[in-house]
Length: 156
Image 1 (cartoon, rainbow, N blue to C red):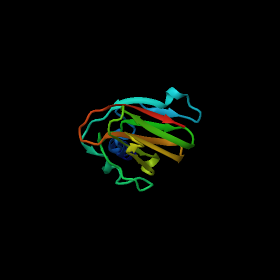
Image 2 (cartoon, helix red, strand yellow):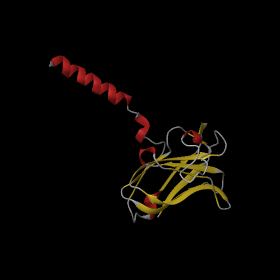
Image 3 (cartoon, rainbow, N blue to C red):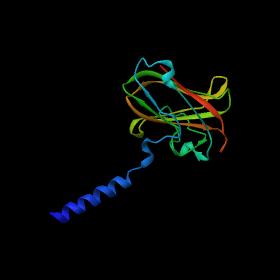
Image 4 (tube, rainbow, N blue to C red):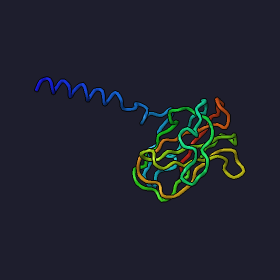
């Protein structure tokens, strides 16, 4: 029995050390939102930079829109939706510089990608049927390694 217990502890330690540490880590602030959230609760900031191709996360999103740009391999923000949302918009504001956006849904299932918004070069993602869960968000730049300060805003 003693030998089995010791082996079980070793197996548990090995399993825990193999779990990706970055799965819930982010470069900047996180968001936790429930329907009716106050305006300020849906806003965080950060900056782009990095040479990681965001198309490595997904070549295209659930609507066949291409996922482009460069960022860091670690998500910039983690967004936790405490309940389902019928509609959400995720908007980047750099003052019109060329940004991209990748939002990866719970369990890596649903990916939404954004580039230019209307006549602005700032990226956004808008859509319906946002399930409760954890979303990883990458804000990228069109050019590798380009640093752009941004504000990320989530709106209902």
